Image: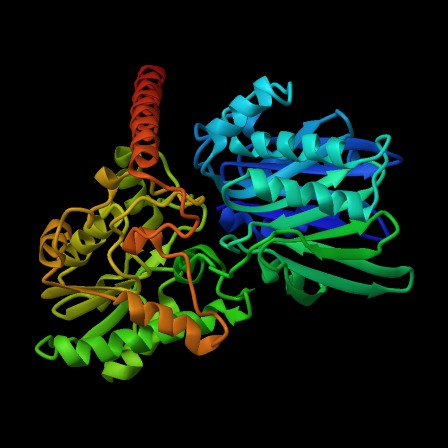
Length: 506
């Protein structure tokens, strides 16, 4: 889950890219980067941290040109918070190319080996995005004639990338002296949209992870990038597109609708906000069908992404909807934070209780999902400490029981509270008097109600079915082993930093 953005404008693009990254900040808070192009030269600024921390006025002045791409990073496969792995990545052979990527490659190790032994390219980081960049560079070199590029040779190179690369990927790249290239994996797992803006000087184009970046910056939504499609916008502002994959199917990640995307975005023709309303309606039906004995006095969302579902839930149950938690917006998403100890401590920094909404009441808390359970457990405890008589918990998503290998940070079953527990056992673990999970088919139907053309979804974290067909038990074992080693390193680093702080503070 990262944010990608590319713009071919008619005036300096640096401010547009910065503003667009702010709109996509929810997709990644670990690192950010912008690269612009002017007269076949690239200008780059990237580092770890939030968008507002990475860019200063002096940085913006050093990003000239009307063409550029940008990225905000959420760590998955590459992992540790490392400035060397901030994107976009750059290569200068055979063309100057910069690339940002949202997703995760499932054959990254194999590709690294091919890069070293066959393509004679060296990979400098652990990021699969750098691997993808080098595959693209190599295929562009093979497809070009005397190192000359046009849209047809670029699309031929992307077709070869699709043949070699496996996994989930929405990509934005810029080729020096040519333009901006975007493409999406043949399964359409991670999102990408095209927007345009008509100016007196001509049409400007944008490609972004979510439509919110298009709308909020005054562009108009043209359409989604199709699975397997490549879109190329040349330096003169002409849009070219071509289907580059032999076989395609649309399987959007359903977790985008549950949690990842902003509610004001439209992904693959479905309003995220409306899908979340429908999730609430489906929960109403399940509660009336299976949990009629619950005496609910008030419905309270866990901010922010669960609000639409909670509102519909309260409406359907005919009980009051109340805001019981105040969110500190300057604390990062706990879902992204490394280490259980750090995540647990951050929950109470992030949320504070409005006690009057809990005291003496049977409270139904609503969240978008339950992943590790740390946040849910702390929130249930906060509700009880505030005087709630009984605490029920509803999840707009089904139990998360399996690793996600397509770009969401839930790669090991050991970290997932529902992986080896029944719903009753999960309820006991988080301290709830009752726990209501969404059914998977109801979740799918909630999205289909909004766009009936969406017939299939990527739902591996709920059902263990991996749509790319190449995720084996051995692969998952390798991923889990790496994740365990990384997590141990993160917690050791966090502990060392805490010790240093204690020493510094006397």
